[in-house]
Length: 274
Ligand SMILES: [Zn+2]
Image 1 (cartoon, rainbow, N blue to C red):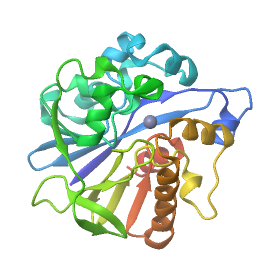
Image 2 (image 1 turned 120 degrees about the vertical axis):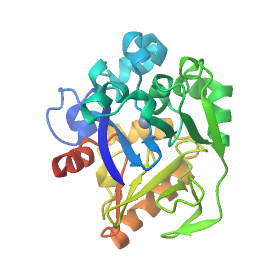
Image 3 (image 1 turned 90 degrees about the horizontal axis):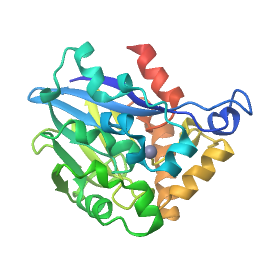
Image 4 (image 1 turned 180 degrees about the vertical axis):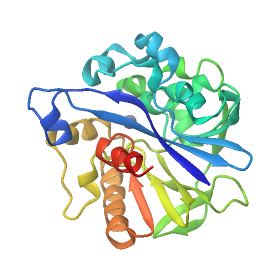
């Protein structure tokens, strides 16, 4: 299976040094929305979607507080939909979308693919539609679900994969795309593992925010750590899963390449290789 790494939105919060860990203290940081486009025999699979074209046209859909804080670039050309023609694909070729979770910066693009099946853990779909509390209202945006997405929900499975439990195949009978529960950031948060060229890629979503968090010893810039804590639904679970990902990287780094949604260093390493 051929896999493409896309940046589907650039986020520019203050400050470069405190968020990226390098650059100017007063300059803007650069975060990405790392999305996989997987060429499967029966159509394209997107893993996460970034923000969508309706969001770029009308950023109020994303919520004013989020827009102010993370300062998205709002470039139509960065959306997943806009990137398809240059790769030789049409929007209708995207049959399936697996979302790590339904936060606005991961689910915004699903409205651009109204006919695709949206694979998401049932608990996450329910949380996104019920929007409980201030946190639920900020992170899940009604405009992203107003078109009536074709949700295909799943529950955790019964397999083990490199020490992770509850793993299941996304497509029954296809051993090369796996769903790996990684709760904490949200309770339904799920990593997506794709095997390509004999190696695994693990899209860990927002299970961690900075590449240093899965290195040994772990480290991350402090403003990014504050963002992370503020977005935690269950801190202990998030911290435990982040630690398991660090161990996975340390012990199986030659078999599994792990990356998160927003780290530009990780994305650049994949796109430079391509
Ligand atoms: Zn995110």
